[in-house]
Image (tube, rainbow, N blue to C red; front, side, top):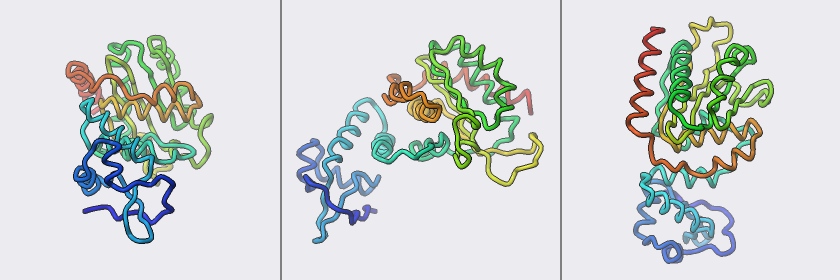
Length: 272
């Protein structure tokens, strides 16, 4: 169903759909199909009811075309273009970012012990396989990082960069990432990320009873998005800018994904 045009002030240089088509090389028919199926591009509306498109829609459509030429699915390319036009929240959330930009990633409710096993599997496979990766993570509480500090120091020896988000150091009291658990590896040989958040109402529960909603993936674009959020929150703006580029590899190779999955199964089975 087509998206209702937004009744907002029309910027200078606003275009008809024909003008947008001429400037981007995409036919009006295709633009209308994108709008009907994906809500993109989103037109503005004149008082007369006619539709107009902002000058920024040209760059957004061209970005979609570039990503399609790189082999990215249309819905993913559109989601990326829409994401880049959204205002960045003061303190972003890895979990919320991935749910917004990669809606096909379905959360699964997992016990804390399972998350520990998943995290260890990603960390160890990253150490074993990745070549100069960006290793990133987020810890909810200081004592959680203290328990893992020696392990992460060892992991950092083979990483190109290591980014850690510590709740007490980087996050205000109302930051959504205070409820999040993140472990990821963004490298040329392996891309993987685990992101989870802890639903409220579990204060006082034993660790073994705590449940998280988790997503994990080897999609390089999702991993890159998560790494970028962690770098931004940790204040490493140079790295965040570097990570604004899309990963060069279209997807993690099958052998790397299989090795990671095998390690995950073994580690999870050990705590079952």
